[in-house]
Length: 106
Length: 116
Image (tube, rainbow over the protein chains, first blue to last red):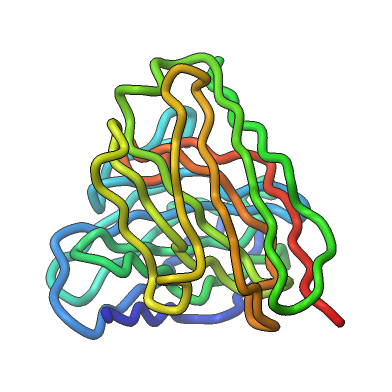
């Protein structure tokens, strides 16, 4: 089973600040997917195929990485970006998720 | 508009069974593989099971193999999860998801509680 480790677990950022969340895989994977979840809501697809933004996702978000190291970056933090972000892989079952990174507003 | 609406959750004693349903609309159900993903309260997400577009292939996480059965009725555009021999580690919110570019659509989730 591929284990995905996200860091940091919790982070706070001020509006306008740059934010980077990292997802590390225990084995090499082909792509990473990211989901955003706000309290009381279902997860929402955010980034797919490592770097492609899902429909409606602002272009201040970007994704990158390869092999065992991937990241989600917010170029300039906005209040609406406060949420928990999860990474997830498709490189063979079981498909696993990272433990999540809770992004709050400073 | 794509919609996934789960039902069938509730409170059940350990060892008993529960069947979840997911009614879908807004897309051609028979064109897509579907999956169940669960979220343990205040914790992370866990893939549970997947079924191919035509139901010919099913895949499960090890901890539910032999206890859970994923199925679909393409004529009714509905996904199911039969959960037997429920255990204390199974309580969670269960989400019905569509497999597109990742899990590209999610239902609102249904809660399953297992307690004696």
